[in-house]
Each structure stands twice: as C-alpha cells, then as structure tokens.
Image 1 (cartoon, rainbow, N blue to C red):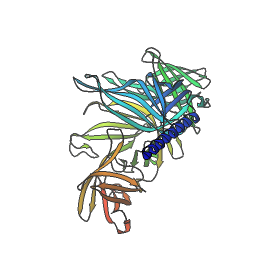
Image 2 (cartoon, rainbow, N blue to C red):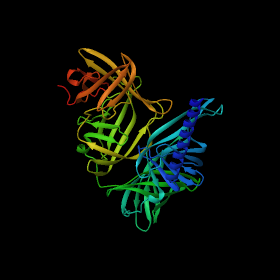
Image 3 (tube, rainbow, N blue to C red):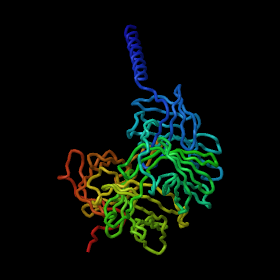
Image 4 (spheres, rainbow, N blue to C red):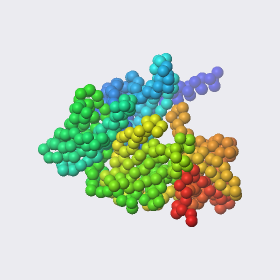
Length: 496
C-alpha cells in the first residue's frame, strides 16, 4: 500500500511539474500578433499570409482565405489547423473515381527572418463517396517574415527593365485544366508609365506608383484589369531583390499571394565559357555542361544535348523513345522531342547567375509542345564537373551497374515519399532491397542487415570509381569497383 501511495504521489508531482513547465513556456513565449508571411525557400515560391487574431485565431491566405486555430508545439513550432480544407488540385482516374487533394493545415517555426523547416498538411477527399481516404504531408524550408519587417523601396526603377517572378499566368485555350505562374518582363518609364511583356510576347500598358513600402502595378491582361502590390523582404546586392506580393484580378475579384525574385536585366548574354561547367540550383539538382555539348543531370541521371542559340539562350532538348524513355541518341527513327528547355542570362554576380528559365512540354505522348511557364532561377556556377564524394544527393530513380573483377551487379537507387510524406532512400540490388544513406561523404547501403560502404576514389562522366568495404574496415583494404552510369554519355574526353 505504501508503494502505491508513493508511486501515485510521484506521478502527481511529475504531472504538476509538467503543467508548471508548460505554463512557464507559454508565459515566456510571446504569442504572435499581426501579419506574417510564410515564404517557401525551395524554389516553389509557395506563399501564405498569416493574420494572427486574439484567442489563438489566425486568418490564412494563399489563393484562398480561411480562418484557422493555432497552438504551440515543441521547439517553438506553431500548428495552424484550417477550419475548412482548401482544394489544391483534383485527379480523375475514372468516371466515378475523383480524388481532391486538400490543404488542412500548416506547421512552422515561430522564429522570423531565418530559414526553418515547415510542413503543409494535406488530405485526399474522394469526391464521389464524400470521405477522406488518405492524409499526407509535404515538408520544406521556409522563411517566416513579419509584415513590419518588410523594407522600403531603394531600387531605381525608371528606364530599366526588370524580370518579375510569378506575376503572369500561363494558360492554353485547348487545355482548360492547366495553369501555371510565370514571370513577366516589366519596363518602367517616368511619370508612372511602363510596359509589361508577357510570356507569349504580348504587351500591356502599365501604370505604377510607389506608396510607402509598396510598389503598385496596374495593367490589363486578356482584357481583364490586374493589380499587383509588391513589398521587399530582401535586397540582392545591386542587381535585384526578393518580394512578397498580393496579385488581384479586379474583374473576377480573385486574389492570391505570391513571392519571388525581381531582377534588373543587365546587358549580358550567355557565352560558351559561362555554360561549360556545373550549374547548381537551390533545390540541389544540377547539370554538368560538357564542351562536346552533352549535358548530364546530377551526374548519374539522364543525358541530353545542348546548344547556344542565336538569341544567346542555352537550349536543351529531352529526346524520348516510346519504349526506352529518355535517350541521348536515338537507336531508330521512332524518337521525338518531348521537352525543350531555355535559359536566358539576366544578371551575374561572381559565380552566381540569375537566369530566366522556361520550357515547353507535351501534354500527352507525341503531342504538340506547349509553354509550361517561365521562372527566375538562381544558379551557382562551378567550372569543375561531377562530384568528389556523396555529400550531395545524385539519386532520384537512378540505375547504376557495379562492376568489379569481371562481375556486374545492377543497382537502382530511388528517393520517394512514403505514406507520411517522408522521403525514403531505397536501393535494389541482386542481394535484395534495402536502404541507403550518406555519412561523411560516403554512400552506405543496408541490405538484408548487411552494411556496405562505398567511397569515391575518382569521378568520370561515365562512372564513379569506388572502393567498397564494410564497417570497421577502410578504403585501403576495400574492393576496387566502378559504378557505371546508364545515361550513355560515355567518357569525357571521349576514348580514342
């Protein structure tokens, strides 16, 4: 009996201590008040406005506006649960099978002006049966910015042309379900006038004005009046800025929050010297552009041909074979171009390039190529090709062949989200299926409880020379092997 009493008192003390700790945390943690913005940093430019109200209420706006209830979570995280799910897109698999993907909540770090993880929470709604059939999350990096922290306009706009991200929208009359944000080229004249050049090379007259921290643009698009109100949250040297903006179609009253780059166009054009080397995007994906005009995606993935066209644009084509998929060289006469990629240099600062990127793609196999959108990319340039270790991920759904001592073993490395939205690294080999990871620049595979370590000893365009060993061993005692790539680009320089 005494033991039970002591145990009960102990548990009660722990409960009281936890309650006091939570009360102390809540007292010390200042609840957010006013307007904030969540700005995705992974290249998607996803943007949400948060207007915090009393009693843990918050108004969440994107291309929608809905109330939400928020609460504190561990490590200064905030979870905002939407009062009503918001439709994002729908997929119709058959006449009686339609799935609507809906946003249900956001969780993010409460610290402002720094990169932090954030999560979008989704559910899948079966339209015909009117029930939730699945839930998942998408995680990324974002910046939380308080509206009062936004900056005043310092850039000189007049008599300059600027590429402004996401203020335009691509649509196609014969594909009514498709729409995509796009950048537009804007020239500012004095006396509050200017020109907007759209993705399809049509132009609109512009009126503009500066009002406090706001740059206000008004123009017509497809006979509908548009208003864009931009505010600065970061300046980029002397070449541009990053903004957050409210975009309003004054005819339909539809509004959405956007963000992105606004880059002043310098009098520059790409040269072969600026292309040859490695181009890395903020997302981590990169291309190696070789002097023989072959480009390889992230070392081990697809290869394609590139050229510098008469407009000073870098152009790549995606060549498709009906059975083999993406190929570098067509084995017969059945291949066709399924995508065209274009890169135009806007500005350059050291080894950092800001480029306007657009591509045209088919909507169905061997269909006409249609514009998908235009975006501003930040590219880090390096004159060196390839990788020296496995510190950067090169895998998506990537086949490679491990060759050693006249033996060949087929590997497939893949990175796909599981049912909870978390990316899982999986590897298939003759020994079975397992997982892989990167530790101290080396590739570790775990298959049937057997761990192998692969360390790069030399990079070549057609494969990675590695030593293979097990935990507790070293490269000096490991087996020498080569991971051969499947993209058919061959070695560089080409073997005689």
